Length: 401
Image (cartoon, rainbow, N blue to C red; front, side, top):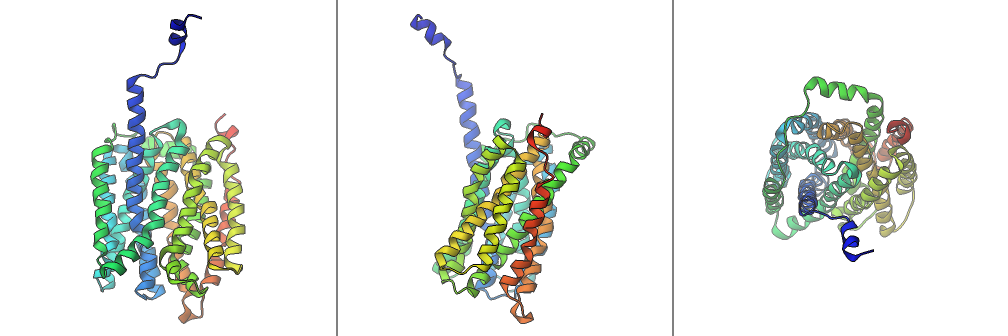
């Protein structure tokens, strides 16, 4: 074959295509950094309440009320994002998320509650909007796109307590310095993320789309509610659980939390890829069986500090993988409602799961004869609920034939 003909037969990647690909990944990176900044703030309250020696019941009520209000608004924010408010919600969510960084400077519990609520509302504005935006960057690689976006949040959440306690100890409580992270990231998001191209479908079309998939979405919803409940309850009580087990200070003040959340981040991309290739049902069943075994081992097994950290990381990976699989599957079911689907499968389940901190806080309160192990043991029932619901997720060949 003539060399000129050989060259002519090679696929040519246009300059516009290369620019589009570069823009896709840079937009995804900025979104992931925004997620990191938001979740750097959302993980602070559980460790601060232990450092400040707050009453577990009161602290649990504050966490639950903020979670109920904030996560309850996610469906509203999700619909708004699909109807043209994407950039406003992303930037506004980042700005509000820093509210909890000011709590060391306030003593009155009502004001503390408002600051924790501001962080929860900011998180609720950012999460469905960011997840929906990431998922539509490449519809054929939705699982990977969502996985990269969620990885940013997991890294921020993992570092949240370590960063907060380090700044708190070294600066005499000047935790407002950390506000630079969400504020600077808000500027980057405002510069790089494009506004929504237009308004989404009408409210009646939105309702019809959800009605068509109500059974499948219902199963995904139940799994997320169960997985989120055990995650919120464990994170809320983790410093106290580790304190009862005699863990060193560095583990109490963020080390255990980092192991749990970073373990979850390691599973996001593999789980997203597996869901793209094998279908959500298989992945969800397998990971919830593994979650049950690891959680029982964590609560009942004895061991050194490093073995506990390894168990926390492994459980975080198994339970945390639910998130990316559920959201990417929901976006496949309703591709035109990305942010609303993300809100349905994150915000409302998280709203229900937000009762977990108040529940386990009351059950674990030593003044009422409780302890963290028994409280978390009762909460472990939710893993069985997640497994049962995963059996009702449709097989890929049935759903997408």
